[in-house]
Amino acid sequence: MLIVALYICALVFGASEATNADLIVEDTQPNCPTGWQYGSAFKSCYFMASQSLDWPDAQVACENIGGNLASINSPQEYDFLIRLAYAANPLYMTWIGLHAINNVSPFQWVDGTPSNYSKWLKDQPSDYGGLCVGWRTTYGGDLDGWRNIACESQQQFICKQSAGYCPNGAQSGSSGSVSSSNYPKNYENNLNCLYQIVVQAGLRVNLTFDDFDTETTYDRLYIFDGPNIQSPSLTNLTGHSPKGWNDSIQSSGNSMVLFFHTDTTNTFRGWHANWAAISLNESFCPNGQLSGYTGPLTSPNYPNNYDNRLDCLYRITSTSKLARIRITFDYFYTESCCDKLTLYDGPTIHSPQITTLSGTMPAGTNYTSTGYVMTLLFHTDYSVNYKGFSASWISVA
Ligand SMILES: *[C@@H]1O[C@H](CO)[C@@H](O)[C@H](O)[C@H]1NC(C)=O
Ligand SMILES: *[C@@H]1O[C@H](CO)[C@@H](O)[C@H](O)[C@H]1NC(C)=O
Ligand SMILES: *[C@@H]1O[C@H](CO)[C@@H](O)[C@H](O)[C@H]1NC(C)=O
Ligand SMILES: *[C@@H]1O[C@H](CO)[C@@H](O)[C@H](O)[C@H]1NC(C)=O
Ligand SMILES: *[C@@H]1O[C@H](CO)[C@@H](O)[C@H](O)[C@H]1NC(C)=O
Ligand SMILES: *[C@@H]1O[C@H](CO)[C@@H](O)[C@H](O)[C@H]1NC(C)=O
Image (cartoon, rainbow, N blue to C red):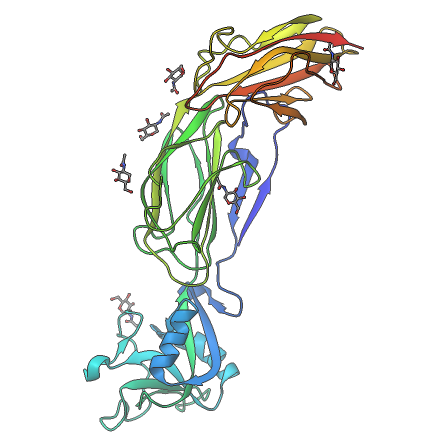
C-alpha cells in the first residue's frame, strides 16, 4: 500500500501548479493479498491452503489466486516457511511446487526457479515414490523434509507469488520515462502504484506510451490532470494496446499523476511511457493582470475566434480592498464540451470555484466575488473555436 500525503500549496497563481514537495510518496509496505503471509527476505507472499487437492489441482488453485505451488529456494526460505507451514499443518504432508515434469527427472520447481536447493528426507527421492513432492512439516530434528509421492494424493498445499513493489514514482526535470514495475518483465499482482510527474511552473507534461499490455478490465492505469488522484481524470487505460493507447496526453498544468492498480491474478508485460515538459501555449493570451475599479475583459483575438490549446489566466484585483468584483458578460460563445472559462472566488485557481462556463449565455449574465480579487482561467482544446467572450468588470460594494 502507498501512503500518499498531499499538501496543497496555497496562493499559487498558475494552472494547477504543484511542486515536488507537494506529494510525498512512501512505498512503506509490499503488496501481499489479504490472507497471504509476507516473507520480506524473499520478496514473496505465501498462502497456506487448508483444502486437500491432488498436485495438479492444487497448482491450478494457486494459479487462480495469483501464484504457483511454492518453490523453496534457500535454507533461509525453508526455515521461514516451515514455521508458517507447521503452524497451519503440523502433521500431514503439504504439497510444494516440486515435480518431475513428464516423468523426467530431475525434479523441478513449477514456478521456473532453479532447483539447486533441496531438503529431502532420508532415502528420498525414492525410485518407488511418485512424481510430485510433498513436504513433511513436522518441525524439528530430522523429521521434516521432502519426499516424492503419487501426484493423485490429496494434500494440503502452499502457494507463493511475488510481492508487489512500486517503482520510485516521483519524477521531475524536463523529461523522463515511467513504466510498470519489472517492465518489460511482467508486473506483479496486487499493485497500487502512484507516479507523479512535476515539471517547472508554467510548463506542462506531455506523456506518450510506447507499450501498453495489461489484463483487460482488472489491471488499469488511471491518469490525472494535476498533482494527485483527486485531480480531474484525463484517461484510463486497460488491456492490450487499447484504443488510443499511443495518443500523446498533455496536462493542463505542470503536473500529472498516474495510478496503476492490479488485481490478485494474471499479470502481463505492463506499460512504458516517455514524458517531456512542453510550453503552455500562452503566446496568444492577452495580459491577464487587471486592476483598478472597472475595465473590459475579452477572450484572446476577440471579436475574432480564439485559438486552440490555450490556457489563459486573468486575475482581476480591485483597487478598493472593501469592494467585490462583478463581471457581466455581454457576449459568450465557446465550444460547449471543451472550451471553458472557469471563475474562481479569490486570487488563484485553487480558490473556490464560482462557476464554469461554456457554450452560449444570454447577455447580462453576471457573477460577483465575495472579496476584491477574482481569477478566471480560459482553457481551449485542440479543435473547434468560436469568438469567445466579451465582458466588463466593476468594483461593487
Ligand atoms: C541457486 O542458483 C541461483 C542462481 O543460479 C543463485 O542465485 C542461488 O544463490 C543458488 N542457491 C543456492 C542455495 O545455491
Ligand atoms: C508529445 O510527445 C510526442 C512524442 O514525442 C510528440 O509526437 C508530440 O508532438 C508531443 N506533443 C506536444 C503537444 O508537444
Ligand atoms: C476513469 O475511471 C474513473 C474511476 O472509475 C472515472 O471516475 C473516470 O471518469 C474515468 N475517466 C475517463 C476519462 O473515462
Ligand atoms: C498507435 O498504435 C497503433 C496500433 O494500436 C498503430 O497502428 C499506430 O501506428 C500507432 N501510432 C503511432 C504514432 O505509433
Ligand atoms: C499554440 O497555439 C497556436 C494557435 O492556435 C497553434 O498554432 C500552435 O500549434 C499552438 N502550439 C502548441 C504547442 O500547442
Ligand atoms: C445580473 O444578473 C441578475 C440575475 O442573476 C439579473 O437580474 C441582473 O439584471 C444582472 N445585471 C445586469 C447588469 O445585467
